[in-house]
Length: 187
Image (cartoon, rainbow, N blue to C red; front, side, top):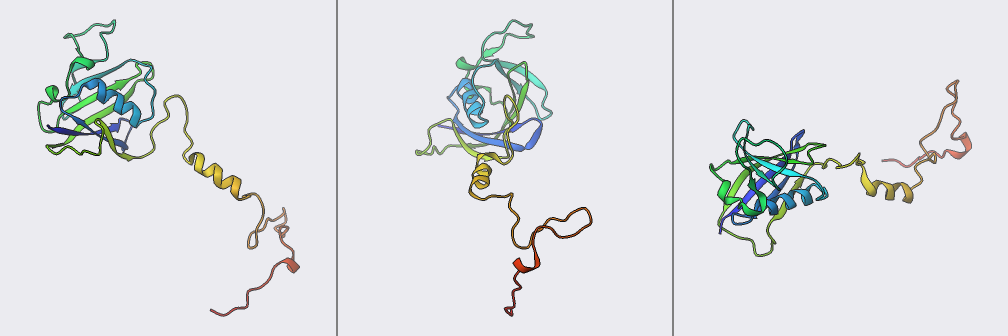
């Protein structure tokens, strides 16, 4: 059974991407769910794929459902369309559009085809994560929750030895001369 490896780039920053592997017999709907998991998005909005070429032009649409809009050709439905059936060239590309109001666009590129299935993986699987994903509904702190733990563990507001504050005249006010010990050990 063919295993397809896709790299899913965040359109606005190609240093942010996720690699997803999927069986060629699985549906675009399963790939849609894997992309949302990979970028930590919810599953509450409309979505569609467009078959694309090397210039990222939009072609045939593979949609979550038939939406109330004008189509050049009727869309294929994600649940009824296998990923392998839409692979026309070895470097096949798709544009994935999620949440039509916010217009999250991802560039989906086939980067590898393998005959070997990894028995440890449950397909589709996210196998690589690069960069900080955009926040779906607002801003995500670049430092995240781990930095808050550091702030709680260490009081970063206290002045320590070697650090001092100066008043308006440039005088040291943080440490007095009697609190500073000189290190006289030789190196």
